[in-house]
Image 1 (cartoon, helix red, strand yellow):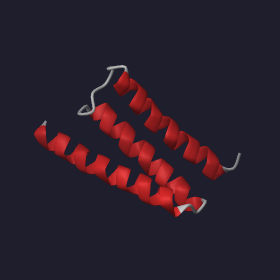
Image 2: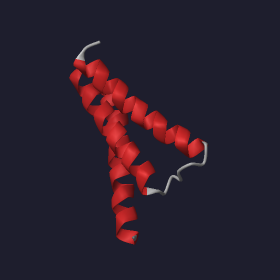
Image 3: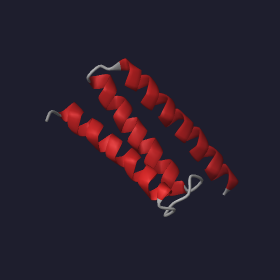
Length: 79
């Protein structure tokens, strides 16, 4: 496994962790931990997709990261 595959796998694992924890009702979509997991996971996966380069996933993960960042900023503004 090369570094971009490892990085992409880590990013996707973080995204899946957020999803599973939410589905099990351990964390809520509005929680700081969920937003951070999504931002970090999507950011890593976006960068890994850029390295390969596979631009459909750069766009997907990039938008996911931006939306997560906007939601995080809103969350911190309401705290």
